[in-house]
Image (cartoon, rainbow, N blue to C red; front, side, top):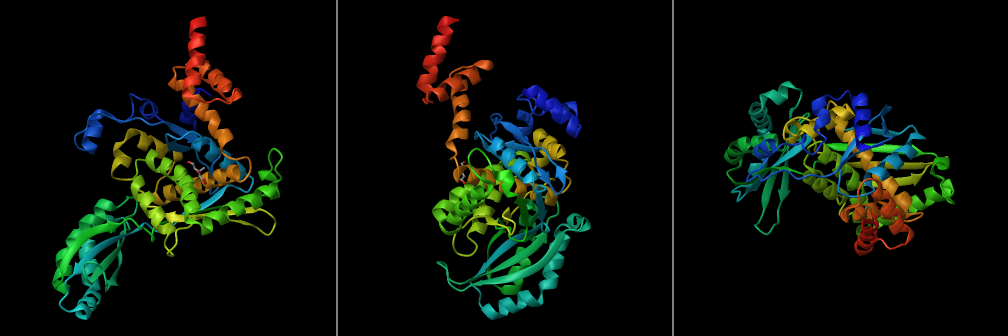
Length: 417
Ligand code: MEV
């Protein structure tokens, strides 16, 4: 399909308005005026490609997945893996409640035990302060859930306590909400402990806000070229085993997962640094950095995959509601809660990992990558329309995918025009 055809197809599927449709064009997306309201010293807006991954059957629903990325092959790879998963009824995905954690650091305590005791005895009063700090969210079913006290008896600055507030932020990402509430709690905590209040800030290790996805793929669907289905499964499981024990491999394995996750997080105007930070810290939660996914062979020789990671994303507030393309993307996916969006994002991460492992463990990733790389080079030397495909094909056929060779070819074409 051409870009125009793709857009009109999506318009039908998601019932997009003409304004939403225009938000996908370079001129119709985020305006400089809107950008000015988002950050300081604005000088303009910065474009990135957005594509739609296909074939995602998640919890029984086919969902077009908008992905913002500069990396070739990501959208194609996700679509391919999602197609494989359809044979096993797609992805099952879910998310826990939207519980974020806020922290207050308390040091220089005159009486360590008394401070802990006071915080525990007055827990309900602190929870009430947290409730009053944002009555609206409590009205929507969110609000404070618990308070925990953590002890750090040794640190470069000496001992200190950390108060954790567990707080359900509902459909928002929650950073601003949590930060304001932690500031509101600071003085009461100081009065209860007689310590010195240090930082008051949310934690990006959102390990109470976890997104999960799984898939089961029958062996016959994994057969391709000369590779038998079972052989592909064994190779994928072996590739996962590598990431499960070696941090040098795990970080690349997880980077591939984040190729998919970040792309949807960005497409929906969410904070991808927060999701990245949470994901990698979660991958190291047992003291050793490891894979965010698990792959194993099931009892009927099928491939079984699972992912779990923190997912601090929202559908209200922040850029999600300012950025016109982010808004259109939420409509495209037809999501109405942060939990629904988080579950979808987890499924995309799992699919992205499956695609990478399948390629790496069989034919290698360069074949697919090189096609797109060649197209990028063709565009960079000025190829237009059909020329892009033709020039890319010639570069691949010559096995010489270099900028200088592409320039030579196009110069010859132009001379002969
Ligand atoms: C490239 O962006 C991502 C991969 O390196 C992921 C992986 O190795 O699993 C292909």
